[in-house]
Image (tube, rainbow, N blue to C red):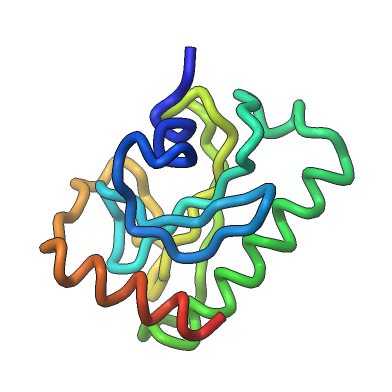
Length: 130
């Protein structure tokens, strides 16, 4: 069964895309911990991140690094944190979260909500910085 991320990859449902290549996609989390919280996924549907072949795993993290650097350029934050939880969606994914405090990456915190215009704006800004 296709995950919600596969539906995003196939454009069956919309997303605020930040960066895309043949094998990866980065898009804004719709229930973010912080403004600009981005998800990075392989296009190949694999549930568990450590089941990804080594070369593909390294490419996924290189892709995430490019996105994180762009995020740091356009979002006022001390760091861009990284988390791999793997329980929310059965499709491997990396969370890139702008951080100013350790608590900014606490997934038990209430999620934020931003207008479509604000989401489009930050997605464009991150994309432009890549």
